[in-house]
Amino acid sequence: GVSFKPNGTVRIGVIGTGGRGGSLIENFSAVEGVQITALCDTVKDKVLKQQAWLDKAGKASHPIALFHSDDHAFENLVKRDDVDLVVVSTPWVWHTRMAVAAMKQGKHVAVEVPAARTIDECWELVNTSEATQRHCIQLENCCYGYNEMMVLNMVRAGLFGELTHGGAAYNHDLRSILFSAEGEGEWRRFEHLNRDGNLYPTHGLGPVAHYMDVNRGDRFDTLVSMSSISASLQQYRKEKIPAGDPRQKEVYKEGDFNVSLIRTVKGRVIELEHNVSSPQPYDRINLIAGTKGIFRDYPPRIYFDGARREDFETLDRYKEKYEHPLWKKVGELAKELGGHGGMDFVMAYRLIQCMKEGTPPDIDVYDAAAWSAPGPLSEASVANGSAPQKFPDFTRGKWQTRQPV
Ligand SMILES: NC(=O)c1ccc[n+]([C@@H]2O[C@H](COP(=O)([O-])OP(=O)(O)OC[C@H]3O[C@@H](n4cnc5c(N)ncnc54)[C@H](O)[C@@H]3O)[C@@H](O)[C@H]2O)c1
Figure 1 (cartoon, rainbow, N blue to C red):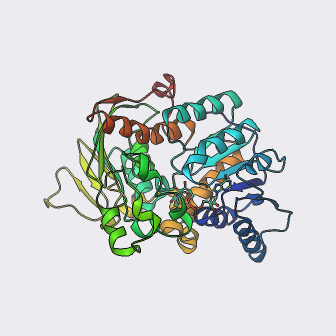
Figure 2 (tube, rainbow, N blue to C red):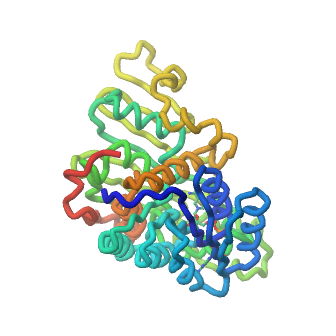
Figure 3 (tube, protein in one colour):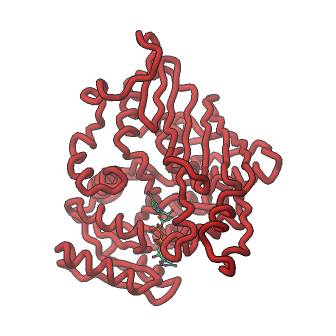
């Protein structure tokens, strides 16, 4: 809830200029009043490629500082006095370290998902953000999707009545990406070697947490989790990767399908799934239900108590009234730019709006910690026969008085 000095121009330093970093650079630099002033990656060519893109797009009228000497070059980027906001888009093991370094140098930081991989890292983010009074924003773009924002509006208008349960997932067939020779294939498959749980909880969970005012009137309390056997990556590898390839020797601990149940302090329940290994269509579930109705996504459909028909209907007849004002305002440009159907630009636009006005962001360090925590908590539950795990109260009691987004 900490406001800060408004920024006329928001000067951004980006750490990690790979696939996602490039897309974030494109979306942030499309927002008026943004300057990308510094770029960092361990691969020099990736930094140069982004610099060339900014140059060609006419967005490099100011000098851009480049860092690519080694794994710790980011420590020099975060020290610069021409950076207001640091964006972190690196492999997961680096997220917390980089976010903490940025805040300690007086910068707000926007970090890719998940912001943390362990409960200790979650606390490190919270403690550092509180001590430095700098914001740690988790870049959860799915909170800015068209359906998610419209449904949030409908929840606020009371259409679903008292909320009782939700559903969330990251079900995405990443097999070819996990075995690719570049990009995420260089690091993401390794997360499957020694971990078994929900490795990527925030895309599905963030929007449901917003519907339920988690950390702002309610709070995640307990989690139980179960994982299936690990089979699909081995099968895929057998079919697609040459016999002598060293990857044939890898042993994957991560089960193909992980399912967790989260109970909130107010007694609501969220079912949370993770599956990046099986052949399947993309699905974040995105379900919210209450005493008056239910919405579920993929495909989007809605049902309200008292409807004459017994089946779900589409969202169409609700769009005029409930389309979110942010989508009304920048939706056309967002769709033109295209990142994940436009949600990436809406997120960038909204975050820059907060940075310009000096107002607290929609997703703060308490959300970053609570939405990332199902990663380590599900691992602990799976390792202990699905035993319940308690969420720490990262807000230290403030969830009871914090106002909804
Ligand atoms: N929100 C979304 O929709 C979305 C989509 C894709 C990826 N992501 C997230 O974005 C992050 C990056 O993913 P990606 O797909 O771009 O992966 P990537 O492998 O393409 O990019 C990561 C980059 O980080 C660089 N890097 C690694 N260690 C570094 C260090 N110490 N200092 C500086 N740079 C370093 C790598 O060289 C690489 O260029 C991940 O956390 C991923 O989960 C989010």
